[in-house]
Length: 329
Image 1 (cartoon, rainbow, N blue to C red):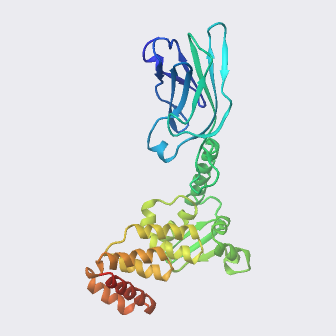
Image 2 (spheres, rainbow, N blue to C red):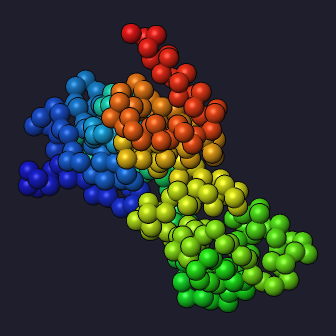
Image 3 (tube, rainbow, N blue to C red):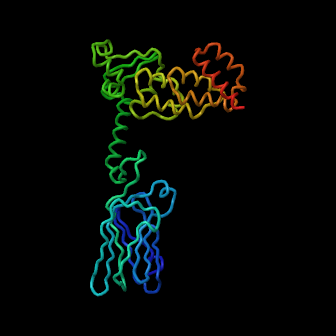
């Protein structure tokens, strides 16, 4: 066996086998990395008075941030004096971060060729919410394909006008859609189609405060295939639509996006929208940008015009923030 082959681990999707021809000439050997699931792994054997077998993930950012929680069966199969197999008790939900987290000490002396065989029963990662760990295999290829295909199909239903049954009249054009999709995504649309209103009778919805381009972006978000460029171009209008039609996830997406790129050209407009739609994080970020970071002095004239038209409560919040900042000096 060549030197490179001596360290190679053969794998299938969940099984790893390391064939060791002879350990007599050395007391320690570490395998080459092998991939099972999301991680690269190593096996090592150390021969002293006992044989120590270790299984551990390769140290990486993935391992540090998301260490595997493994369930597996590990065996050592020896060919000397007839085939002999030693099995460690099944390991269940063992978190592995370092090469000391799983060590199997074998007291039975082994000579000649042997195989270290690992069958992975499950691999999990910790839940971000602190709940039960999630199996990476339970995510499922079929589930991913199904979700992707469903989104693609919804998008085609809109773009190709497949069996549409409602027309949306924007201020400068019309677009066809599906009342079942709209009703499933918005309680406001559902109410229109569930009661004897003109939208139900005419199979039409008038949205006179929305352009056809914004309406297209709004619908592509609802159908799950909006392009990021379209979202960014129309997010203020989409925020209005999300609030009007009670689509909370779209409102959250707009809110977080507006927080991310505040600058002197848009901070006052963002502050007005934050007040109008009760977006507390956006409001706090705008006030911090203006006051704590001193940008209020860079837009003095714009601020004067803004204060002449702003709501009294918003003006109070701005001056309250300024006063608190002065107290800190």
